[in-house]
Length: 347
Ligand code: URA
Image (cartoon, rainbow, N blue to C red):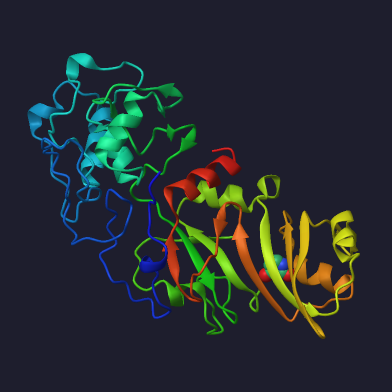
């Protein structure tokens, strides 16, 4: 799958300046002029890579005769899709009204390959190939017909079994939280919060879980309430990895100790993995992976085994990696990362 969002170059600085209009293109990159591309004209080259997605302008009202014969629900859905610029664009994709698949065709819906392309799966041509190869499912049913119309708001679409982020109003971001920033969207004591790094984003974002004020590194931000809720819920705890600077030297036995469980005041905490990354004199950098979400868990575990943490950086959350993101910047998660997060929490 192609990246839904660009890491690196799509990073925004701590000033929160956004260099673009926030539109998502067919390759999943935010960018563009604010115009809705993908007029649906398919040239001889087939699938288009032109920007698609939300319309910058007001929703076009369907012509009255288009609504005739539709149920009130279908009308409402068509209006909603239009308001997002996702209505059918009259392109000459395969399939027509008489060719509908009862189980997957939504009246007034959006052509499946267009939804896939807008979600960052690839060009429309590539998406058509995926559909033709039987690799795309809508609500659990394999759809092989290019013209199938779907409702990206309400249907679950999977490619190779992985759910894709079909809704256009939902964002998924990685944020490199700097040290000295509160994991909160506001603070009545005037401390820096995540909001200070988000610029003019219109969405109401949630942070997934928390990092201590002094902990740096990867945080996930989204307005997908269900994903955020599940990722933060103890029954779905995904693995998280941290780099910790601690006093050295670190004994050979420390990993075994942490992986067999450390007794804390609120119960035993167990590391999934542990390794020493670097040792020099009286300092060491260690890497620890765990599923735990309890408060100050890494600091408490390492203090308990005699290595109080002086610096803590979270480097992964499930399938998402911090990589080379600069502190204070955000990037869109890729379609693959989002699919893996959905899978991790059973969505
Ligand atoms: N463990 C900690 O001790 N602090 C964090 O911020 C996250 C995990």
